[in-house]
Image (tube, rainbow, N blue to C red; front, side, top):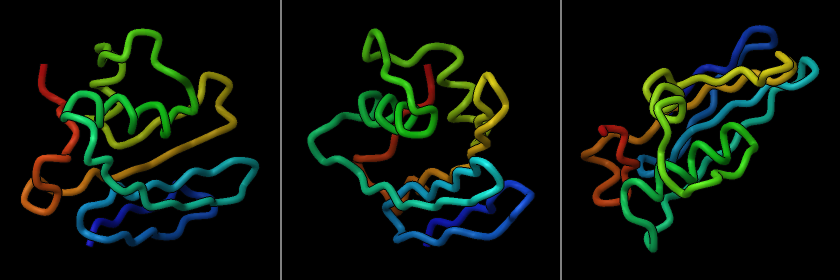
Length: 106
């Protein structure tokens, strides 16, 4: 199981299947959780870009990971520039994700 804690307030936990990325997004005091399945058609870096796009709500201009993207993936959290959205997430462990685990290394 892949799990992550939601930002406080309001807190909470999201539990997802082993090969999914667990995401908890807090906007306006409301927590919204989701489980993101791997996309078997994407390689490691493309999978990582996809996760960053989902977490941040923005589209990658290059389709490649930037240093900021790598920092987001490494931290497991993101706060929108206006501070109104806080996101925590947990990538699946390598042993659970197989070839679909996002590539964080440069």
